[in-house]
Length: 305
Ligand SMILES: [Zn+2]
Image 1 (cartoon, rainbow, N blue to C red):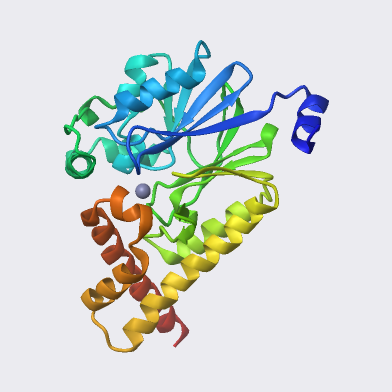
Image 2 (spheres, rainbow, N blue to C red):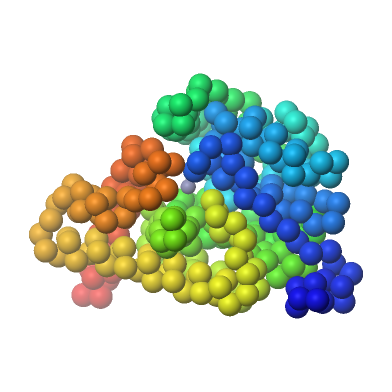
């Protein structure tokens, strides 16, 4: 009996299983199954979500899907909700209240549609578009806990990738569902994903590390357990720090933000990202990130003078 099984038997808590499923590369969602209950973390792209829903059904069989928990408002994370709910109408969508505000904006939905169309073109599939039907069922603000089919979940504010980025802690399973603020793994690289603030990202890493969770769920990737869970956070933090330093060093050397973007893309736009993340999305995110890193560093310098 493994430690995980022993702990589960001792508490009469069935083991948590995680499945990384997607309708197309880059649109991964994580299906968490515990006994006869299941929740989905994120929902991938809209254009291929019928295939994702079919894969969920093939994995779950007769087990119901009760909730879809969103980590942030990007099109490759909430785009599949409508299609998944067509197959699982009882599945309720839970998200940070900021996600509801963003989805309500036509300008934000327009961006989601544009990137969904780009991603569909990359995948060679028709650009199905159902974002206007998306309804968030329940707000869960950071610090609040909500009961789900697989147990209570605590929402944790982890801004940095977006302002709405949210992680979740499952106390019954000592499992931390991470947002993209704390990075992802792409073709065995630790890929930094912070965009709107590097400072907020550092604080988000602090907040996640405090849980010392035995299991973590990494967006697009899936479950990491034991020592490797702590190792992920340490290595991913080092990758984010390195990316911020890369920007500041190139800025100090006199490069323009455009030039930094070119050098940054040559170093960090690789592997899975090349195929899964449309270059337009990568460039928009990265140019925002470069401006914010420089602005935050300058603000700090000014505050110290
Ligand atoms: Zn994102």
